[in-house]
Image (cartoon, rainbow, N blue to C red; front, side):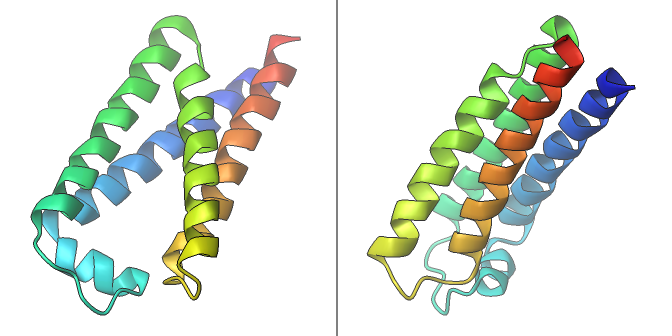
Length: 121
């Protein structure tokens, strides 16, 4: 049961990364305005971030479904948590998506690590 829960959780994290990636890639201006930025600037950098999210999602899937590993997910989510958390403090008031993403990335990484540990027992 726990292994099935782990698989569902990992798939949800992968789908989340793909969705964020596609939003940034296909509609960067909309995605940034939705996240709370008033000015969006050139589309290249948000699109690059979108591709990066999709690449990470592929990495998560490859590692998990080939080796049942979660190192990339936990590492990426931990780094994102720290980066977004500090970014929130340094740019206060930050657009709402920055602290929200810090919290959700942290929770996703913790949840995957917690469930993986239980599934491995």
